[in-house]
Image 1 (cartoon, rainbow, N blue to C red):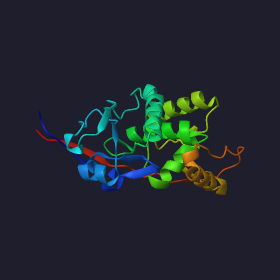
Image 2: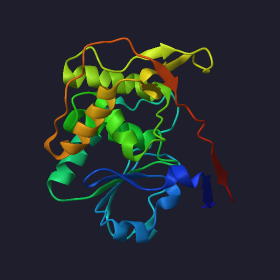
Image 3: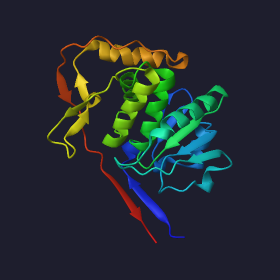
Image 4: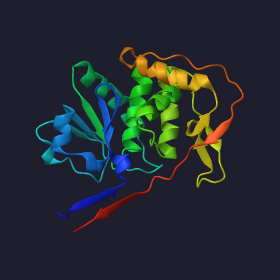
Length: 227
């Protein structure tokens, strides 16, 4: 079998604890040392290209076989893995979700979990997550499915909107990628973090005029396969 190596920006691949017991990282952070240091009991591999590594030891592993493309159908995994993570954490486990860079596939699974179990909305879930992992950036197709997931489980019209941006290839961006000049945005994220173990967050404030400042950065990622 040919060997596969990955070269990823170390700032993106590092491990982050999103809420107590739930971790996310990129592929180069996967090691027996990481598993031991954070007492990881379960690993969710959100990729097609990364094998379930034997070097991680005798721990439970699940592979989702997801490609990081806007066309990938991730929707069924959002609720299934959210429920799976909740069951594991409730039983005292510690879960590590990973993809290649830890910004799109694994982030989408974690955002779904936060939305269903820890926060009032997808927007609050995103703001909670970026406090510990600011590089989070699911692809546009995943955002569409996350928005639909929130609408279904929260029985709401949704808290995240896709806004037009001519600079983007798809001409659209989720509005959470813009810094909002409103103090309550920060307050909601802080309250969500404070109450994460109780699965509560403040509700969204009524719509108000917002001032946007882009905070977008490119996320260079290179994958090298070596025979």
